Image 1 (tube, helix red, strand yellow):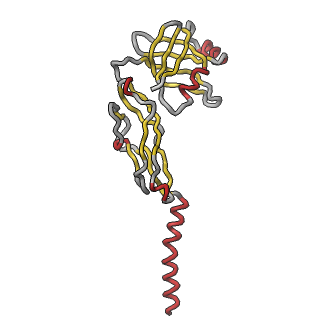
Image 2 (cartoon, one colour; image 1 turned 45 degrees about the horizontal axis):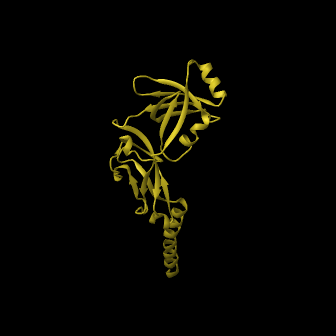
Image 3 (tube, helix red, strand yellow; image 1 turned 90 degrees about the horizontal axis):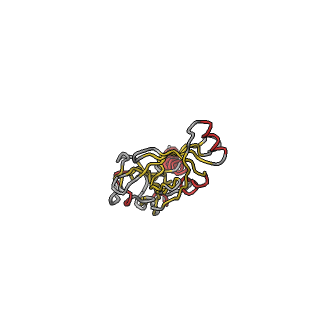
Length: 205
């Protein structure tokens, strides 16, 4: 898994006014948990570009005024209108401790049901997994080349070495569903022979 570099500076004032002033200057108030203490710091918002706006999971190397540590992004809060990052929580990690992460999904292969007029619907964009940091992937490939109409790939169908999946086993990841247009066409096709039979019977009389 790739690593994103974050340069941070310790915060002396943790009040709301100070936090807003940081945001106005294009900075993000942050905290890193884990270890012996919480560390409150701030960092330029632009450094989140490769961490948040991506379809891959990442580790984070944080350097706070010379204190270096490995972490993962635990939670990020956005402004509901402007989508400015309001706050970020990081979790410190260690090689000998398992961590939990949401890993993005990539669908691979061509589903036969789609070729017949169905629509491939992705129900989940990521899977929650537990693993040691060295075994954590940046994405998970899900093969859909066997999916026909009304067939689905569920969490319980997926196995990846050294990963424990934490989502419900019956949860659907992707499925091929019949499109509305295809359903209407099938209904019209079913009606046609029935109407033809009625006309034929009417002619005999």
